[in-house]
Image 1 (cartoon, rainbow, N blue to C red):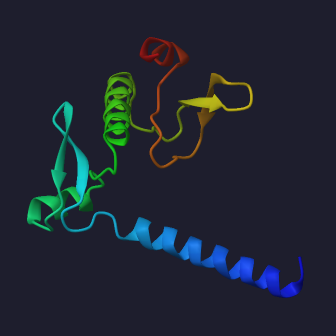
Image 2 (cartoon, rainbow, N blue to C red):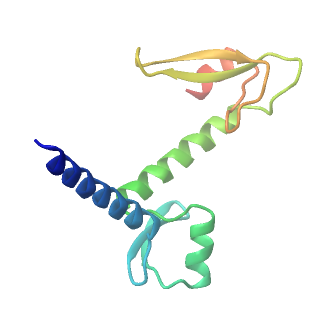
Amino acid sequence: MNLQEELKALKERIAELEEQVKEEQEFPQSGERYWCISGSWVNSFFWKSEQLDLDRYRIGNIFKTEDEAKFALEKLKVEAELRKFSRPFKRGSLNFIICFDTEEDKLYTETRRFMNQGSLYFECIGKIELAI
């Protein structure tokens, strides 16, 4: 491939990436179907830029597909169950967290002296075992 062909291929790839970014930024568009969590199930609606649509968008309750919405709902259910066994971070105490080793494909626990955004803290390993 000569320099002109390489340049043409790069320009085409840049145009593809720009289009992909544009599509991702513009979801949802007027009249486009979206999914959201409604109570303990998911519903679909068509985007009208009405207040309810905008409120859902602001809190992150807008999904492109039903599967994405169902996954988010299941994640919220699991987090709610885990929260029942957790406690707030306690400075000067052992704060156990659940970790997942993606290379070993297994769960393990660690202690934390500092707070991590979004982490659930447990007073002991026994509470983690109960939660799991």
